[in-house]
Amino acid sequence: MGNSDSPPEPTSCRLAPNVSHPFGLVPVNLIALLPDVLPPEPRPGSPAVQNDRVSILEWAVRQVSEDVAVASRTLEVTMPSPIVHAEIRSTDPDSTRAFFGALFGWTFPEGAIPGYTYVESGVPDTLPAGISPLQGGDPVVTFFVGVEDIDAAVADAVKLGGSVVQEPARVPGVAFALIADPAGQIVGLAQQG
Image 1 (cartoon, rainbow, N blue to C red):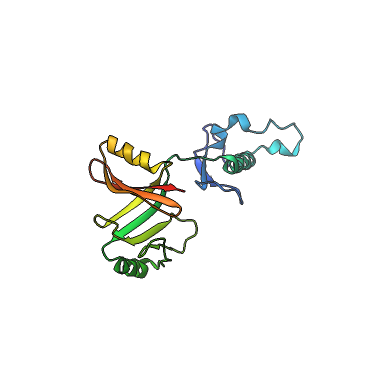
Image 2: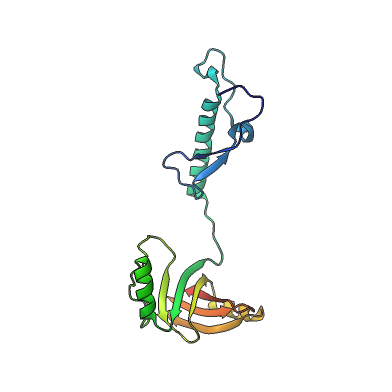
């Protein structure tokens, strides 16, 4: 590395192996951004006297990687109303399944109600989805938001100027409904239990 009076340009570095982080990259300008965590000045005559930027950078990356690894194991974020499901309601669900199965390679395990199937994309831990016949109303592609109390959420949607597209229905393990915002966008609500 050449001599320079200006700090190095910001770079990105991959985290150390076996470190899980949702972003995968950590932006760093370690010399400029982490002055408080740099190692202490080396003693004259010690092997660390070389004190080149690569050594400091490697040390700082290890420190950041260790901090990120600890944070990723201990940080838990709870979203109060997560998106929990997506669904296609079709006038011809068999044709819809045939089309998307051929296009994407999806398979369709049976669901809880007649004509309803889940979507199996072959990718683990993806958002659950389904394809079903119409359940009153028009064909729709929508997502479902998890709520604590489906009846209260439907009532709140109406108070805010929305409308009920499908009243709450209950099947074993879940209650679901469809609402629309004042402009007509349809969103599902789902309550587990």
